[in-house]
Amino acid sequence: MIRPSSRKLYASVTITSLFWLSLVAFYFFYSLESSAVETSEEYSDRAAEEQQMPRLPEMKLSRAEDIDEARKQRGYNDFGFNEALSETISINRTVPDFRHNLCKRQHFPKEMPTASVIIIFHNEAWTVLLRTVMSVLNPKRSPPRMLKEIIIVDDFSEKEHLKKQLDDYVKQLPKVKLLRNPKREGLIRSRLNGARIATGDVLVFLDSHCETTMGWLAPMLHRIKVSRSAVVTPVIDVINMDNFNYQGSVDQIMVGTFNWELNFRWTAIPDREKQRRKSFIDELRSPTMAGGLFAIDRSYFYEVGSYDEEMEVWGAENLEMSFRVWQCGGTLEIIPCSHVGHIFRRHSPYTFPGGVDHVVTRNTVRMAEVWMDEFKELYYKKRPDARHRDIGDLTSRKALRERLKCKPFRWYIDNVFPELYIPGRNSLAWGPVKNPASDLCVDTSGHASENQDVYLYKCGGGSGNQNWDYTKKKELRVDDLCLDVAVRKDNAKITLVTCHGMQGNQLWEHKDDKTVYHESTDQCLDRASANHGEAVVMNNCDSSRASQHWQFTYKFISPTGGSNSLFERKG
Image 1 (cartoon, rainbow, N blue to C red):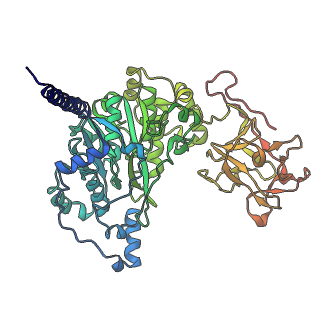
Image 2: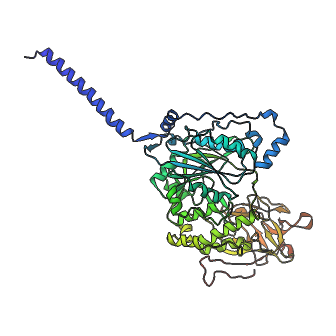
Image 3: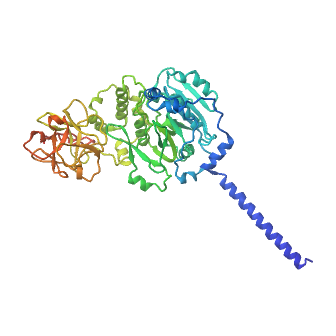
C-alpha cells in the first residue's frame, strides 16, 4: 500500500519527468526544422569555422607619402583610376556593409547551388585584380560550400606583373584557376572561354575591378535555385576611382533601361514595380542590366543562347542579353541583398580593333537586327550611319530566336518596359528643327546629356543629333531630355533637362508666324548673334527677324509600319 506522502512524491516526479520530456521533444523537433535553413549571418559564421582566409603570399605595399604627382598620373593614364593609391591599400581590406537589416535575417535552404565566379582581365592593375579575387575568396563573404571555383581569364595581357608574377601568386591560392587566351579575344569571347571550363551550377561574372561584400553570393544563388530562368545582378555600389572609398546605399537602388541610341541608362524604380514587390528585399525586375556583374544558371546560360560570338571585344552585349532573356521567357532581376562594389574608370585604357565606335556600333546593329523588329528604325533615325555597316552573318542568332519561340520586341515594350519613351507615339512632329535663313539646325552636339547647352550646326550630315520630337505636350525632346530655359534675359542659353511632363519651362508653341514661343519667359527661340557663337538662345519675340523663323520637318512615325508610317510636311 502506497502512503499518501509517497503518492505525492510519485506524482511530483512524474510531472517533472513529463515536463523535461516535453522540453526535450520540443527542442528535438525545433532543431529538425531549424536545421533546414540558416540565416545569412550563420552562413558567415560557419564559413569562418570551416575555412579561414588563406594565408596571403607576402606583398609589400607602397607608402602613400612616397607617391609623387608623376607616379599618380601614370596610374591614371595606364588604368583610368588612381592605381598608385591602390598600391597602398590592403588587398583584403574590410568594406562597409550596406545591406538592409532584413537581408541579415534572411533564411536560405541548406542545399544551395555552387558558383563558378569568372573574372576577365586585360592589362589590369595588380592590386585591383588581386583585391577582386581575394574579396570573392574571403570565406566570410562567399561561403566555401557555395563557392566552387574562381576562374580568372587573361585576355592576352602585356604587362609584366600579369605574367610569371601572377602565375606564382595564383598557385598559392585555393580554388583559383588561371586561364590565358593565346590571342586578344575581348570580353565576350573571354567569358565564353571561362564558362567552358566552369563546373559550378551557376556562372557568376564579375569585372576585374570589383570588391564583394558580406552576404553577396547566397541571395543570388538562392534566387536562381527558386527560379532557374532568372538572370540576377547584385546592387552595384561605387568604389571611388580617386580615393578608393567604398560608396553605397541601403535603399537607393535603380533599374537598368536604355535610350534610342541604344545606350544603357540607370532609371528610378517605376511605380508599377514598387507596387508589385511586397518587401524591400524582394527581387527587383529590371528591363536591362549593365552587363559587368551578373549570375546565371550554367545550363540555362547555354539554353538561352550564351553570347553572340560574332560580337567583338565588348559593347551592346548587355542589351542583347537583356532583350533575349526577357523575350525568350526568362527574367532579369536585381537582388537588393547582394552588394558588389565596382570602379568606374575615368576613361577606358583599352584598344579596340578599328576603333571604339566601329566595334560598339557593329555589335549594336547585330543586336538590333535580331531582337528589335520594326523598332530598330528608331535607332537608325538616331544613327543613320549605322544602317549599312558590315555586321557579318546573323543566320545562327535568328535561328536561335526562332527555335526558342521568343516574343516580339513590342511585347517587351508593353510588358517589361512600358515607361519607355517612343518617338512619334504621342507626337506632333519628329525630325530636324531648321532656321532657313542660315540653313542651320538645332543640334545636340553629339550624345545628349543633362544640363547640356544646344547649338546650331549645318543641317543633315548623316547624324542623328538633329532629330527632335515635338510632343503633344508641346515639348521639344530628345529621348528623356527636353529643351528647358528657366530665366528671362536676352541671349539666355537653352539647356537639356530631364523631361518632367509638367510643361512650364518645357512648353514651346510653334506659331503660324514661324516663331517658337516660350510662354514661361514670354520670349522666343532665336539664333544667337555672331558674337555669341552658333548657339540657340532666347530673345524678345519679333516675327520680322529671320533668326526667329523655324521650320519643322514633321515626320510622324508609327513603328508598326503602314501607310502613314513616315510622311513629311513643312511648317
